[in-house]
Image (cartoon, rainbow, N blue to C red; front, side, top):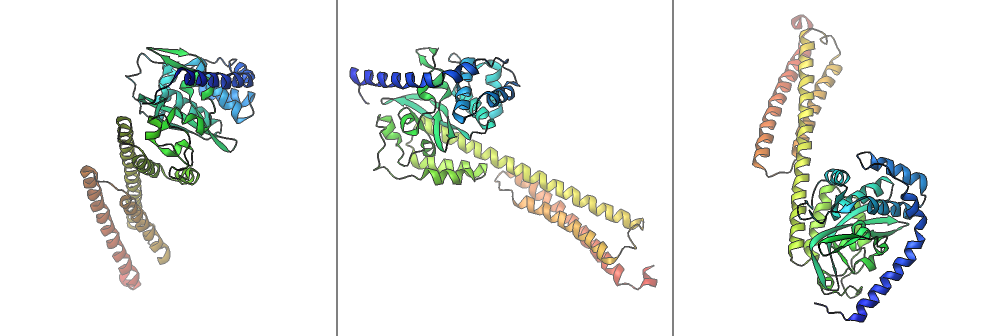
Length: 380
């Protein structure tokens, strides 16, 4: 564990104060303007806030500053109930909770910030990890944000910007150090589970972070986060989860925080797989029902002699349309990747139904072949 003397702590405080003093004056006008937005906190407030910010601020930095200050002015950190919150929840559930309660934990602050920033057109991600200073690591996970502003990535922690924990209380006091921090600075206190979100070509290892050694070391393995992020952004949701799992497993040491994060991602991956399977299955059902409707309609029209006089080519196109729709149903089922016994049983039963309908279509085709190959007097 790293030991600090009085002078090193004093130097850190002086540097922090200097940075904050310079930043406060820079954003005075923005802070005063956003304070004028006093709409009630309800389900419509985000839309109203987005409109207000777009009307009153022009630069991305000012817009992000307005979001950060608005959150700090209107929401409290719920330190009394922090242990009862679910750190991992659905996005809409998280946002609804903080708007309703006017308080929350870091995940609520970060997700609310990200939601508003993205609506304003600034690409923003929520970053999960843990925090620490001078070799002392916090035992709870933490969440903050990464925003792409003016062709560069900056890090914003709406929770630590709002205030800080002091014993069993949360003291509300804005700290500008945590607004638009550069990656090289925030890594001193914030360690993402996934090294991608360090935005560093030579990521600080968890061991270095835990020991308080956060100076960028170019002897560390090179990591091309720019290209990795491009691949990530062009991937599907399930592909993102898989690649995130791989990076975390390769990068992190085995500890409780990381193990919980990996377990959460595995669960989220399974949820996505189930959602995808359900979507493919429902799509297969829709195609199948459409095919059966076409088949029954064809037979019904034929029996009523509504299509018996149509040209042969047109009739065969109608039958091919039925076959194509049933093939689409089969193709959707083949896309389902699952090991769930119940789902597999349902798929197999569904395939039997499709094959039965294909058999009816074959009988119909044989009938049509015979119809058009028979001489007209006999056919009548």
